[in-house]
Structures are given as structure tokens and as C-alpha cells.
Length: 133
Image (cartoon, rainbow, N blue to C red; front, side, top):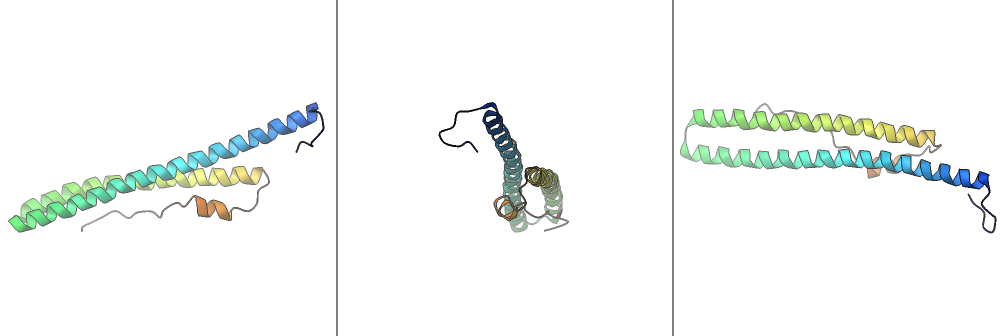
């Protein structure tokens, strides 16, 4: 740290630049992790919307009858939902990798306690694919 009242000598300037660079590296690692978790959240919202749509379609079809139509719609919509779940799970793996990079970066900088990182950057569990609803 720079001491008050001292001129900036080359050693202090270099130390200050190194601290700034460390903060930037750590910040970028955190931003990438946060962005990947946010992407998961967006995908999850899309899954929830498709599930609601699926339930509405099934209700309408059941009122009208037509088991063949229901089965066909179920297959189409479940296929779409399962593709989105696949995207979610791939995004989750990416987020886990970003989390690992953040922890490694912190370790390399001498930071050994990561409990707040776990609390701040919660990675949701893996989603299972639907077979039928």
C-alpha cells in the first residue's frame, strides 16, 4: 500500500499497478461467472414459460377430446422443453467452469476463504429431462 506523505517512487508505482491489475483480473472472472449464471436464469424462465404453455394446451385439448392430438402436441412441446433443458445444463457446466476459474484466480492471489463466493454465485442444480408430464 502507498504510505501517506511519501512521494510515488518506482516501487510504489509498480505495486499500485499490480494491485489494479489483480483487481481487474478478479473482477473480470466474477463478471464472466455472473453473466453465465444470468444466462442460465434466462433459459430457466423460457423453460417455465414453455411448461405453462404446455399445461394450457393439454387442458384445452382434453376439453375437446382427441387423444391423438394431445399425444402429438405433448411430444412436440416436450421435445422443445427438453432442448431448452439441454441448453440450461450446458450453460450450467460453463458456469461451473467459470466458478472454478474464479476460485483458482483467488487462490493464485493468496485468497483462501471462498465461503462468500459460494453465497454470492449460486449455481442452480442440473435439470433432468422430461419423459412425460
